[in-house]
Image 1 (cartoon, rainbow, N blue to C red):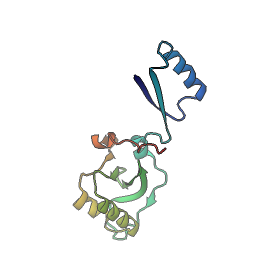
Image 2 (image 1 turned 135 degrees about the horizontal axis):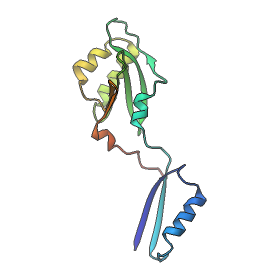
Image 3 (image 1 turned 120 degrees about the horizontal axis):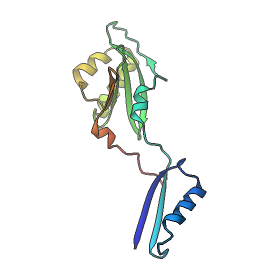
Image 4 (image 1 turned 30 degrees about the vertical axis):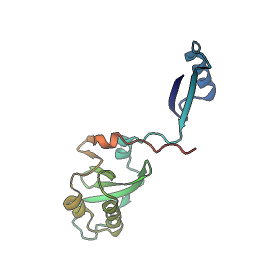
Length: 156
């Protein structure tokens, strides 16, 4: 028995277009030996470039110490994982999330962001270069591990 599995974005084809395509592609197949399984993804793939370049919804960082290079931050959920985007005064944007930082470190980043002090120092001293992606001087770097992340399986 041969099985054909397809994964499509929910808005990529209308039902009638899918049926027309299926009929054309499978016209020479024996219906008794071919199974067609279709998954319509209810979550679009995350566009990391768009995430890094979208300036909306950032929260101004308090900078109560007065010396921080952090300008603003925002919290995101990427494939059901918490993430923090940090925008610096030079215009660079860094994405912090698992598997690059631990849950405890991410919670501490969130706490420092809300608190308005210590975030720049923590990122420099503890986190260092463990970001998932960054926009820096017009160049975008996306770590391979982040590119391999997949959306969670659809619940039935």
